[in-house]
Image (cartoon, rainbow, N blue to C red; front, side, top):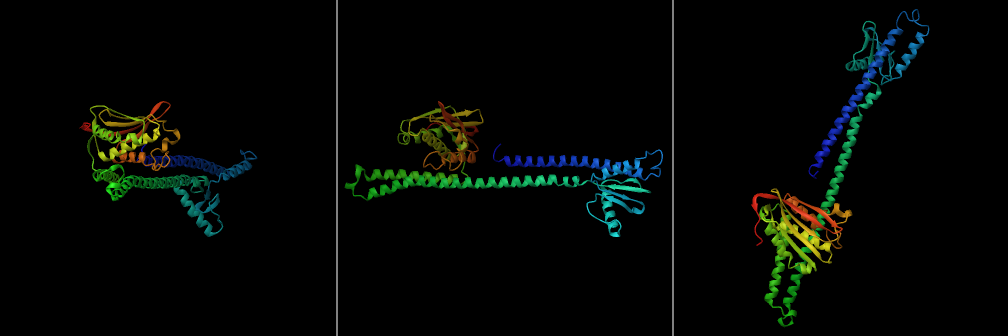
Length: 408
């Protein structure tokens, strides 16, 4: 389940649960209503027997009256509302009403008659209209049962809203950590060439005879041009990550070749004792993307591999291959100690890092570039350790008929 689809799935589960509760509660209410109807019919038969003119004489047993009165009392204890009316709708007796009233007063008679009309809308009365009618309603349990699904739905809704609020709060906190980490990374990326330019300016202020190293002005200007290029590249990258970039068909072979050309002269300083291997499957499909951003994402994966090696030396392997006709995979592997299980779920969170002094930007930024900008997938496919390599894989949709360029 992706982050975009889980709210819809949770919404469907909520509606399904609510529908099930409503149907199940309605079935229980129907069963209780049928039970109340049966009890009311039984009460009506008892009442009819008690009003029989032959009651107390043969063939009735001597204790028949007592038995009928006991049965009538038991039925009244069911709490089913019962109203007995005679000719002209006169209320003769009432029991288990949801309100207190005095049948001896006109006001009491009027109130119970109004209640009887409400009862008759839900269930027809029992008996002979010329003699007496028994009106009955739902017991209190059914009236209370009607509120259960709505109370449950309200509880689920409050829980869902609270969950959404917590998720939004967490998302905002992660975004804030991401922006803070991004700001620190930007300051770091800009700070290095700026410090270098400041040093070269101080160098140029010295008289030619006082300059250490015997560097000429032309050599210093060349180094300053490199620093300016680094500043421009950094500025361009952060500009692209903030706006939807233009995507073009890119040759993956050329992309990997550019990454290799960037890394090889820097490895002796970035990772002493590190050996770089590049394995390409030819020909590779082309992909639609932004070369500057994709190169940045791959650089971050390589830097993450260098951090994993921790200056102890080892091997970093960059491999590119086709995944059928639909996608191209570029993977970066290292022979480091691997990713501990405790941190695997947090690897791509903005601001998370296991390196002292790190900003926790590289992997989260790489995933944003690959997945958010290019519609691909970046994941840890092998955590490494115990003699195996740690591997991160970038999978990008292939362009139909597109071919990668040469290594340049």
